[in-house]
Image (spheres, rainbow, N blue to C red):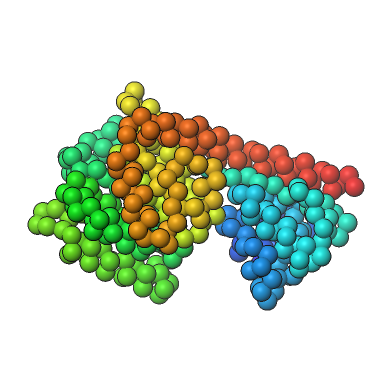
Length: 358
């Protein structure tokens, strides 16, 4: 954090904005404040802030909280995360708080909720291209009349990929006909490949894929496909658009943009074609669950319940699918990442001006 502070201080002058992102840099706001009080400092946390009961056992809890309180404006994905931070400041530092601010060392630290959504413009532009149309035609040729269950997540232990695979296996156990009429595509996007724990997780996932296909597959027809590589925006948009259901089942997640991107691609009336054919199955432990309330909510730890949610998604009548997706699509448009940036910076400027005037 001191290295970041030194680099930022070399490149800023009085009145500049500094927007700090995520838990790696909890100490940075206060380091900058001490060196240059006139900077406008904002901080956004992309992951959940833990409850005060958990935070109280963190060894360097006071130093980390005071580091964050060097900001003019602190923002979170959800009101729950904000409340956990505010409660931690009360229980650990003894600082009282208003719903939208904390007084610290004579300064008012503004608090806010700014949920982050997808890059709407980029996905909408891609959806109307021939590249996406061509890829969807290839999917139709590849999978024919089989419905696609899609799971796309960064390879990470928080994403619950193994739990999702085991839930799919339970679905095949409960409804053997799904071996013939449904295919699941699991895409764990490479992440931290140099880390042995992540390489070990990948090997465990690959073993589970092999076990499921070995148990439920037949020559020429495997129920589970596995793709471990990065995919470009057009291929991803086509998969989102084609899927009958998207499985977003992290064990814990700050927000989860995959859920929003799926809804965006499903709801967009690409090339004048009918929209909203799919269903979103969403973990209650993802921040997105608070905004995408017409999804099918699941507890990813409950393997059988997730399997039954997959079955419900595949059986859901078309009018209900469209109704659910249309409502969530409007919500996703409001969470556009460009608008998120504008809102955050506006609130940062307002909070910083208040402190400079007082």
